[in-house]
Length: 361
Image (cartoon, rainbow, N blue to C red; front, top):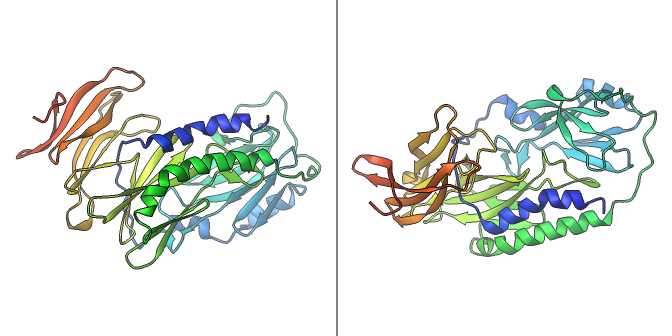
């Protein structure tokens, strides 16, 4: 079946959701006043250069407000959606999206795009593959022969019904693990299909939308993502939302005012709710801060301890569990190896520090 490769590519998302992994933190506080680049996805949909490129595309590319539509060789349409707002708030860094069509790329045989997630990047969406992929245009390989822009758009085709079945399997698995957490916070958290809504203290809504299906095809892995609600902190002031993407995960710590702290993975709260700890358990993304601790006093997250890697250090950490509010058991070892040794993160009169061994020292 033509969709089998997509299902295999996203199987890791289901496993991650079911497993409920634990890991790390990086500071990126959310402020009400954001610099201008944050609003890029909310700018007028068709800049003049994009309009001209669309006119020259022989009907392969169209723009409908925030939605860019690109027809594949199969006749199926890929839709890429700009997002500048996440409900009532501007989207936090990394969630605001913007796609601009720049023209046809003959070397790869696809659509050259400006893709803005954290920053605008030149990408090429492949045209002839069964499963379209976004390639980094700065490192694209030359094709044996140039592929000219098709003279006309292929005829449209109906959507493959296996796509809806794949999406249902994926979201059903997510919903099953997420339902208890949402049920416990029904006044603040709601799920409506691919939309997860967190209602803040002032009743504004913060909305996270899945990008799993892009029109008639699964979204390219480079931009595919989904969100699930993990739960709250002891005391209930902070919510945790996990983001699954490209066989990896990140997370967000959200307070009642809408301030968002992006985390490389789901954090762990101390039993008394006074601290939150993150550890880096894989190095798929560059992350020099391997262990971080934040104080949650006064209803805000303030960094109090960081253990950074030096040079080519590939040490990663795994959370085991709290022995008490001042002792967190960890495992550490080289990334990609099963070798792990026990260490304990301790808070005492000297502050936070690591000690060898897994006991509460």
